[in-house]
Length: 51
Picture (tube, helix red, strand yellow):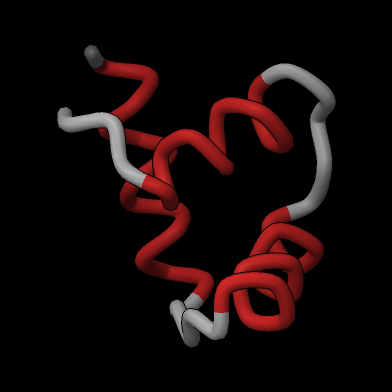
């Protein structure tokens, strides 16, 4: 999977520090103005773990 803003954020906060997906969703919404559903983030995490 390509390195983009969402994947980099997931790697930094979810995988390395173990933050909650709701917190990451809020961070993306506030800092980058991206409204991303939690299910999409869960799918991205599953794809990161496979690769």
